[in-house]
Length: 285
Picture 1 (cartoon, rainbow, N blue to C red):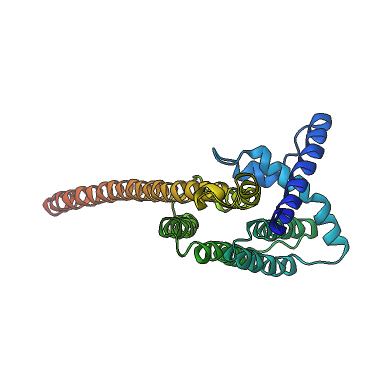
Picture 2: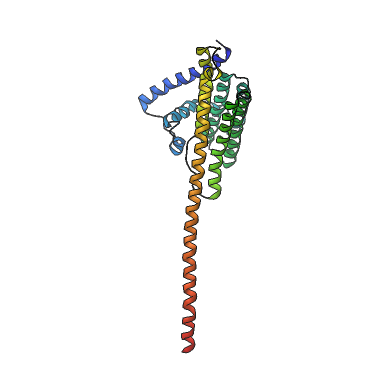
């Protein structure tokens, strides 16, 4: 067993142990529904129940952070440390450690929002900081993968498309809001990308242990490779669909505006035509 597998085993233990506890909780009290999950919803790639499990798992951590006097912005800033460490680990092919550190950063990202609501200090400034840190965290992890796969051109390019798709999915939402049209929904939001990539990284050490070092890279690291392919393809398909929805909404609005403008112009013309007639009658009288 490699050292990296032990890091991955920590993640397996948390996932299995937390899953069993949540299963008992769900059987006794029902699902742990959360307001943000209800608002954002799940997708075909990450079910709402899995998201509810994540928020439920973070409940005790949020309570502890509050008792210790942590601030949401402090937790957000702290998340950059494990995120950067995950990128370095991925660059050296230590995917178990990368998974552990990246998951810690992602969980800190959940904690900061829950902590802000618990303390009643939610703000637009905090959301702006959180969004910026999210982008850096994703950049660290994907840059680590790009460095590691730099000599395997197909995987290097797929990692580049993962990075591109992630940024463009977020950009589509921002652009829609800037243009005043409803932000389109779609697959491969940040949480979904993280789930696939982190699971791929986490199960890669187990796969390498089972298949042995003599197999080709794509076989030894099949979980990571499959995750990269799925995210690269689905994220960029989602980008195309999002921008198509944005363009459709803009064109529909322009047609409505054009129709309203034509109707207004027609009224003005009618008024102008009516005015001389009324005036001539007045003069004749």
